[in-house]
Length: 151
Image 1 (spheres, rainbow, N blue to C red):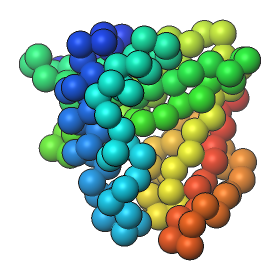
Image 2 (image 1 turned 60 degrees about the vertical axis):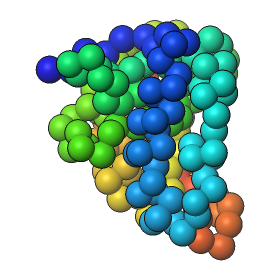
Image 3 (image 1 turned 90 degrees about the vertical axis):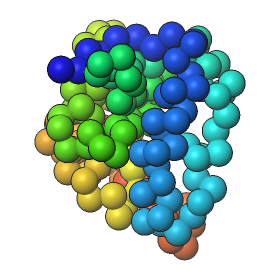
Image 4 (image 1 turned 180 degrees about the horizontal axis):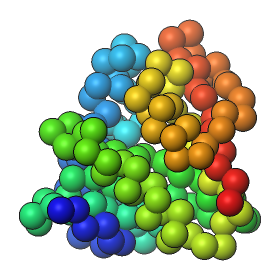
């Protein structure tokens, strides 16, 4: 059983640990060990918890996933959806995104992006109603796929 609640500042260190574990495969996929989620500090995560919306998924007292977002007008900018590797494929990511949709009722749209090689992420987002809006080549090895879910 997984419980999804708002993250607290004291959760920053554990959320960062989950984030790093989850993004190692992305770093390997793109051949880049310096992607943002891997070099972010606990203080930066703590700061985001204080200024944005951060949800955590907890199972047996352990944080097993999280997602963060910030409202920009009526658009909710979603980022850092992460699930620990040993619990991926259990619906935790989808549960976090659905809970985020409920947690930001004033949003008329939700925007996010992922890398073009991240097939599992793209499949999840499309299943939850996100549609590709455009692609942005940011490096030779990385094209970002931008997606939106209208409410």
